[in-house]
Length: 490
Image 1 (cartoon, rainbow, N blue to C red):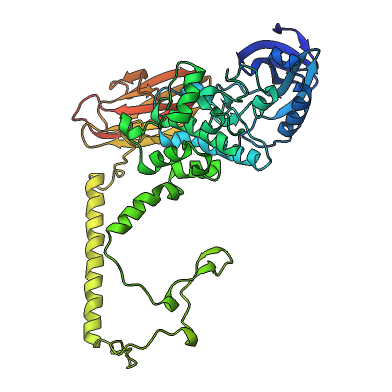
Image 2 (cartoon, helix red, strand yellow):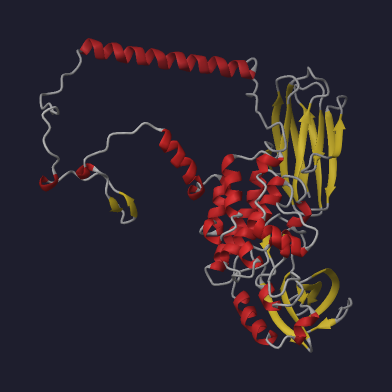
């Protein structure tokens, strides 16, 4: 059934249809009683013929309705009208993460999306709720760029035979379904959500899906049987911890993944090390080291409750009288008083150390003076030269220096959807320069260069939320100097 604009569904007035998919159709609607816009998802018509649907709908809807997290779309209502079941939730109109995929995104920007989503998933998992359909289309973005998960538990509500995966009783979307679910052996659990988010992370950081497929069946087979393409092997160099975290999050067996989704994202950021996958490499390194003499049994570190009550290595316990190692005539311990060095030798040591400190201070001052020119200008500020190393900024005034000749400065600005970005380049000691607004894949959206009025202005109307980049450079390869940019986002 298709709802037309102006139609009434319960307490809501339909405004327009804004999307459709295997999980149903989505409408923007207005709730006059509370004066707010909402999103209404009308479930697929085949659910009406499912005898177990009513019970499943009531059970899962109540569980979803109890979720209260800033990165989970708030559910307002679950109801039905005749043979049509629908869910009402908060209206988020800043686009989806799917709109930003296609080229590699900087890690720091990817983490601004992945960290909140991981927090939302761990929150839901702790309450016994599994999403079952993590994918970029279900990660919505607010106008401020905050990610919000939608369609929580919807795959289970709709149930088998809905056509979501076109594969029997499987629940979820084929391109993001975990191997244990694709093989039909296990039902979806928290590890399956982690696997799906790892695919999303792979798409963000590598710029492509790890298993591009032409149909759902080949996608399911790839999850079960194909090895994950290592990013560095396909021409996308990533930091070692990032690549390793991706591969562990995409492990075929759930037990080989991280304990929680948050652990996976922290490993991506470098906050934790995926130790289990490092074990073989560490074993190989240890095997190459020369053997070290073992301590006597009594002097070995004990493993047990530490001083704070946690598990881990505690301090080495002094051997008791009953566990003293046998005496060795070749070992002796001197008990004579410590002989101190003469006063003149100690003073000479202090003088040498003081001289070294003075020399280091002078060298540092000279270096700062050279970097600043005549000592009155600001120190050269490297703002990053590429999209991957761009400096994150917000609207306002920012200064910089182009030095040495040929230098460029790159800034990153995160904006919500439907934002007009205006950047004014004000020349300081820089004689000639240009300013450009770029997309995340490096495409120039607008560029301006001027030297007469000493101001260059670039502007672009961003329809989609996400990261946009500002590049400042010199018109001439030998031009250097200071500048400032005024960034307006409205």
